[in-house]
Length: 161
Image (cartoon, rainbow, N blue to C red):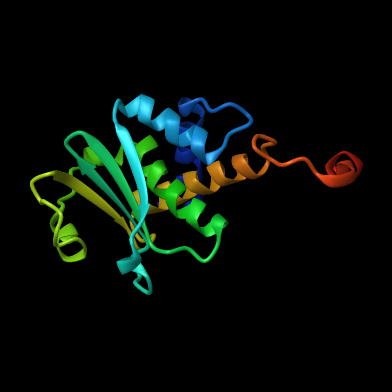
């Protein structure tokens, strides 16, 4: 699959997800929790600092957990989270990947609680490429949204668009 094909699949998934024009990361988070019928916890995992892997989605019996590396900026943090959320929107948890890799990252976590895990490290497979294409589209939607944007001094946006 090439990036153009991935973007086509991502556009279709974004349309089906039915976000309002003024989307925020928080709104996407809440909508996903309602869609999946379970809570989604997002937390930083310092152990991922300096690793190739920068995001992990753990699918547990009664909740989803998104862990991410310490981010260099709010935008970078948002992109990692949107990538993992995109896997959820695209229903990649139905692909049935194993949670074996979690044992090395989180040795104190009860392996019986984690049903599956998806880890973000590269974009060499179709699922990763499509999730990143959708994350890019969601990020663009958030950037173009006025929701949660603090008022600008002297109405800069009105003057300069």
